[in-house]
Length: 493
Image 1 (cartoon, rainbow, N blue to C red):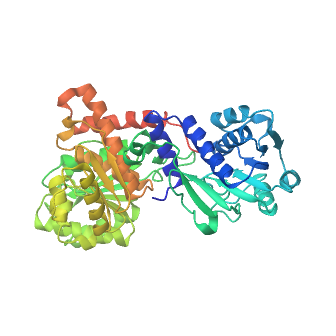
Image 2: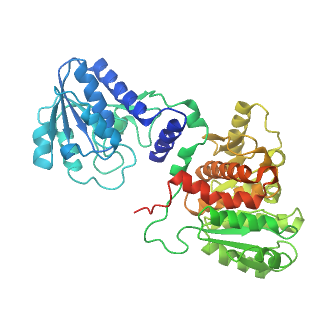
Image 3: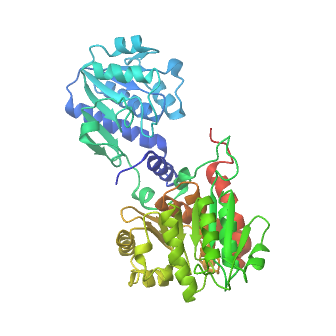
């Protein structure tokens, strides 16, 4: 699997939660680099270019270990006075032996002088997740590395990967799995090193999934945090309200509910925080021209759509799902397909698309795919993956261990409690996922994070309410889960 920068952050945090500290991962990464360099290069002089973050820390660990093996190591860094950005990188700098020469560069002249004549370079300047053009002095260091004519070993990724200027590496030692953008053309020979990340950290959700959550910006105003449109209700009134409230508690700015006129006053009465608008008829019906106009208007405002909560299985409502799915795709509005809407798509799977997240339980999975999900967890995960690939959408199969897949990747979630079998908890999950889609997450990422948040909220609610927990208790526990996972409410700048 190809890993993004966010995937790497998720893995590190999940590994730490499983008892493998990031410091150990850094030590293992530096050792993997040192082992590879020692295998490929005879003892002699070499230069490690170390940046201010943990990628630089990996390089500094490699420098220490290579010096211990008899190499003459020089470290070149743009960081003055040991002021590295992370505590782990600072600790790796402090651990360098006196035999390692240290050169601090501040400009292009210093970079060229420091790299002139270098025969072997270990590039640990910048890691994954870089955006935009390189700034000084990193730019000059990359240019100096490329101009040196040295044999270059990149740490995890070549510095500047994905930008107009990047290190030209002969080999790249990448960790755990291949990163986005790594090819033989961009990274030379690619070596994947195992640095001790547990299999569970990659397979199961954990606190690391919170790294996916988009924090609000300092200049954010109403609507930019996501507008969730919920389409449901009619025979049932609590379900769309629970979904809308869960979306708000998960951080959406607005939750708008379109519901048939007979359900409208009841749904609107649940909370003044919900924007509830009535549609003509007793059941969801888009054969009515006025209802089509209303849907079109709100879809143009919405960031995501949750379709299905409380909808019922009436034929007119099922046809309404078909129309809503088609319009959402035309407007490129990502969709959570839940509850009775899943049954509506059993014979219209052509209306699913990669922008959809479908959230069935076991019986709905059988209705949608024609097959039962196997009891064996490994077989179930593979069956869900194949189904997602066949449906051209992401799936979140709700079970004691949830399975999330986009047809390629698979994530399992074991948060939650048996007492969450109460009616409405699935609607809460759908609302959380809708909020995350509205904030810009992909359906797969929204599904895995929503499953984790929903389960943790359920655990918190059960701890307080015991077996009398209600779906609304789960909804009210969502902010506490976010607070604990995100470390309060800092503003992203």
